[in-house]
Structure formats: structure tokens, C-alpha cells
Length: 218
Image (cartoon, rainbow, N blue to C red; front, side):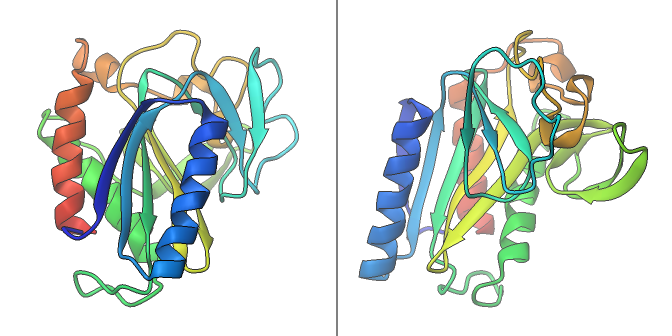
């Protein structure tokens, strides 16, 4: 990923960020570029992926936006680091086959897991977890610390260029996830790195570590 262009958008409205993502998707496709890596955060908003089910959002007091990514209802807020890789999947990297979306998702999870290890936090990517709403088990994309989810992933692909990405819970926000079932799970399923460490997390430091790791794995 050394040839990807990095951009930091800071705190940005979700709708503005989505428009900028789609502009980059068109640029990457039309100019056949390797892509971009975007970091940002958003004012509180809940986005509804294509797999969202009735009842996923039941008492959320804020903005709700329907989006064209996979996955279910997901919270985005200023306590998170949001990662948007605008990646041209026709460029093979690190032995991955062209246009391999699943491999891309696993690489994104692995990068987050590796950075969490630098904080002495043992995490894992896609894993088998029980959904309390259905009492059934399913493979759940994302990053988990034990039975708690610390990062949610949901991607879209247009013209074989990725957009959307990952929301990583860094600092604790008591209002986050209230009134919704994030990714179909209960509010209590979610956890922040601050809660795990029992101390605040430096966003800039975490972002730099993740940026460097993504350069190595994508």
C-alpha cells in the first residue's frame, strides 16, 4: 500500500465524507490509480447497511442514514477512528488475488488486531459469536476482544474500487450505541479501547500505528 495516497479529513459530517469517498472512487477508477487511505471521525450518526433488519434501531436519538455497504446498523461518532480505504481491487498486493474482497476484509481486520497487540490487547478478527436477538451463532466480520466488539467493518465496492470501511471504538462515549442493536448485537456487546485499558487513548498515536500497519498488509 506504499503507493496509496493518505488523507486525514478530521471531524467531518457523514454526508460530506460519503460524497468525498464517491468522488475518490470515480477518480481511482477513471485514472486507474492504486487508491487512497482516508482517516476521519464523524459527529454522531447511525448508518444502515443493506442487511439491516427491522428493530435494529429502536430508540436512537439522532441522525440515521441508509447506505450502500454490507452489514447492518452501525454507529459512527467522534469517539471513534473511522477508516475509509478507497482501494483499487484490480491492483494485486501481497500475493492477494485481483478483486478478492474477502481477503481485503481479513487484511483490514488483521491490521487492527496487530495495532491492538501493541497496547497489550489480545483481539481477533472474524469469529463465531452468538447473537442475543436470535440466540444463534454466526461468523461475524469485525474485530473482537473476547466477547466484545471493538471495531465494526462494512464495505461497499463500485467498479472494483472499495469504499466505506471500519469504525474503531477508541474512547468511551456513554451515548454511543444507545437505542440500537449495533451490527445486530446488544449495546453491551460493544467496547472501546479506553474501557479495555481503563485509560484514555491518544487518537493521533493510534492513527499513526494503524496507518503504518495498513501500509504493510494491504
